[in-house]
Image (cartoon, rainbow, N blue to C red; front, side):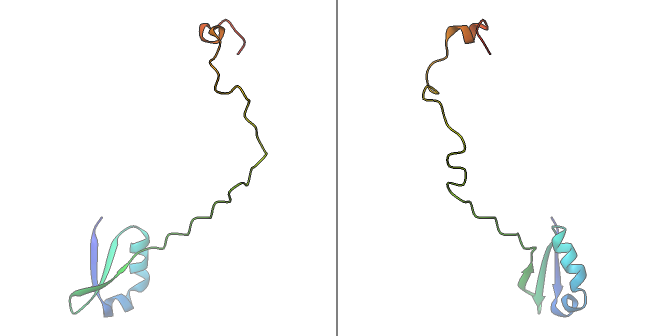
Length: 80
């Protein structure tokens, strides 16, 4: 990733181009008197909040889900 440093005047006149560079992943730094003062970065959309309990009751787990599987299963002689 390359870094492009521009002064404030250039940033004002070429803002659209600089925004396109930032969206493309390039690091754009704005400087005043050759001292960096700001960085252009694209905004990351906020993640949606999770809703706890949204699917409560939609599925169930068998009471014997943690029991050992029968030998017939391991030997390939039992039902699938």
